[in-house]
Structures are given as C-alpha cells and as structure tokens.
Amino acid sequence: MKKVLSILMLSINIIFVILLLASTLSGFVSPSQCVWISMLSYGYVFMLVVNLVFIFFWLFFSSKYFLISLAAILIRYSFIPLYYQVSGTDNITDERYLKLLTFNVHHFTKDDDACKKTIALIKEKTPDVICFQEFASMPGKINVYDSLKNNGYSYHYSHFKKNKRPRGTVIFSKYPIVKKGLADSNRCIFADIKLPSDTVRVYNIHLASYRLDEEDRDEIDRIKHGDMSENSKKTIKKFKNTVLEHEKEVDMLISHVEKSAHKTIMCGDLNDTPASYTYQKLANIYSDSFVEKGEGLSTTYNGVFPAFRIDYILHHKDFKTDSYKRMRTNISDHYPVFVSIEMPTK
Image 1 (cartoon, rainbow, N blue to C red):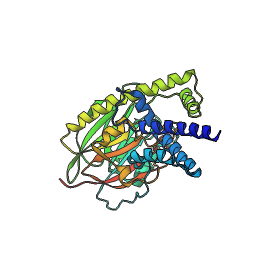
Image 2 (image 1 turned 90 degrees about the horizontal axis):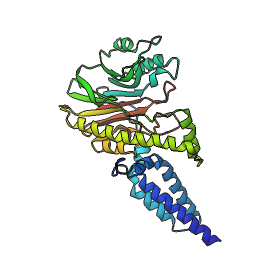
Image 3 (image 1 turned 135 degrees about the vertical axis):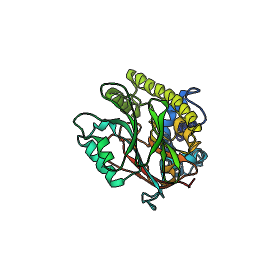
Image 4 (image 1 turned 90 degrees about the vertical axis):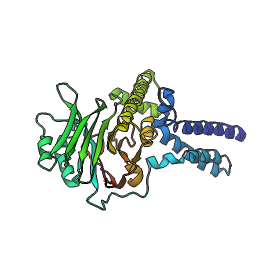
C-alpha cells in the first residue's frame, strides 16, 4: 500500500513539474502557435507553490524525489524575481529624476470620491508624467483636466472611444509634448516629451481586457476549486480570444517602438502577468522598474483574476529605476504605480 501511494504521489508530482515548466514557455511559444501554453502562464504561481509543497513532502519522508521539483524550479528560477522582490525601495534619492505615475482609474466609478482622491494622490506624489487608463471625464465629477492644469500639468494628449460616455487613455505632462499619436492600436498612445536634458517617448498602453462579467467571475472561482461546468467553456473561450488579441497588439506595439527616434518608456495596463507572452516580448527590449526597485509581490489588480501584477512601468535599458512604489488605494480596481527613473543625458 505504501509503495502504491508513493507511485501515485510521484506521478502527480511529475504532472505538476511538467505544468510548471510549460507555464514558463510563453516567451518562446506564441499564443497563435499554442494558445494553451499561454493560458498556462496564468497558473505559474500556483504551479510554483504546489512544487514547493512537494519538496517539503518528499523531504519529510527523506526521499530523494524532492530533487524533481527542486530541479524544475531552478531551471526557471529567473521567473521568481518577476513576481517577488526583497530589496527594493520607494524613496526617491534625487528629485531631478523623471517621476511617472500609471493608474487604471476604472472610469472613476468605484468610489464616489474617486476623482477627488486621485487629484489628492497626484498632489502628494507630484509625478512629472501621468498615464491614465480607463479615464473618463463625466458630468457631475471634478474637472480633472482643469485640476491638473492648475497643478502644473500644462500638456496632455488623450484618445477616447467615440460613444456617449468618452473613455480611454490619457497622458498628462509637466513638460512640453512635441509629438503625439496612436501606436497602431486604439488602446495605445504615445507622446514625445521634451525634458531639460533630452526628449523621451512615453507610451500609455491598455491592452484588451477579458470582458468578464459577474457570471464569469463566479465561474473562475469555481474553476479554482476544481468545479468545472458547461459555463466554464464560455469563460475559457474569453481568455483564449483575449490572449490571441494580446499577441497581435504587442507585436504591433513593438514594431512601433522600433521606429521611435527617441528612447522610450512604457506605462500602463497589460492585462497580463509576468509569465505571459505579452510581458516576455516586452522584456526583451525593456527593463522592468519592479524588478529593479520593487519589493514584495506588488499586486496591482484588486480583483478575482488575475490577482497578480498586471500594471507596469518598463523603460529603455539605458535608463535606471531609482524607486518603485505600488500604492494600495480604494480608488479603483487597480492600484497606482509610482516610479522615478534616472536617465543619462543626451
């Protein structure tokens, strides 16, 4: 009986080792080649935890089988710092560095005082450049444009969907915007900002959302507990379609970045985790502010799924992050990210 149980646990262990390794392949296998590999990237942290449990399980029984999970974790150890950091700082050491804030404000609808709280946050942190996603200026709310202009943000560029309630992405800047436009996607804009030392291009991106309704969120909760139903197929299909859409968006975005006359900074909501194809493609050309100066898990989405880091500030590899701070607020279903960046002079 003991031998049968050992074989069963070993078999389950090997399955989770394979799943762990497969969940890290999104940087090598695009969604269009195998969408299920990309879907597995959402489960990387879960697979990692399960394999850690197996290590302790085998060690408890003094079995060398713990080496199986340990080897799998070490093979893809480079993924762990993308999720967890221990030596970061949120203290700005030089006020001359460029300070950026990215924040998906969720149309200012989660909190009755969302606009007021957002303005107060900006007054406290005084970023030089602000990137808002899901921004909306609606009747009855504080006029964010006027409020920010009165606080030194004389320049802005926005792109809204054409409907009854305009909403979209906006870049606010204390420094002149000398060029602006769309980055081959209705959800991605850019602005060339003339700083005292140089001109830098800032992208504000908001990749396709998963369009999850309340039923989908309930279904995700059931899936997490191993309870699959007929409705699960509909929810999984939404994820598959969004993952495929992200591939097209990020490929177009990278093509646009490669044509830039200036070094670039990318801010915004990727709607994807660090194990995803989207992030891995961007990580080939950018440094991640969180990896450089973040601390802890720094979850940026306060929702059912994915409850990980999906909002980022990435920058040209010649730049250097001085500080990183994820701010816990109740303003939106996302948390704002505040970063200061040291850039070499021209």
